[in-house]
Image 1 (cartoon, helix red, strand yellow):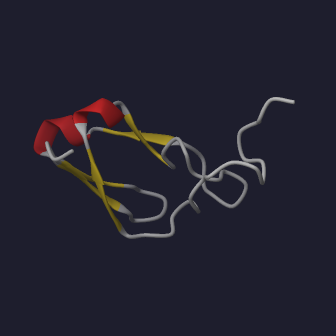
Image 2 (cartoon, one colour; image 1 turned 120 degrees about the vertical axis):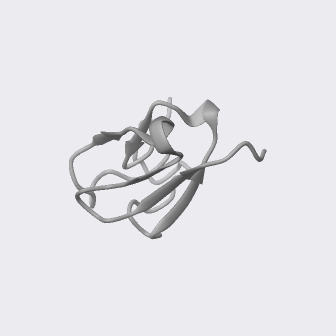
Length: 71
């Protein structure tokens, strides 16, 4: 049986659980909630233009995203 997005057998993180996230260039394009987050308790997906200034704020949950080159 293959795993499906958001099922209990995946290592997903809760959506909107933090207020500050660091993202890397490999994570682009950036959306909130991000891939790898549970979606059942989240807001609609919105794409954020973090490339322009190096930071972005989600208009739904207020989470801040910062672009970094750290691995």
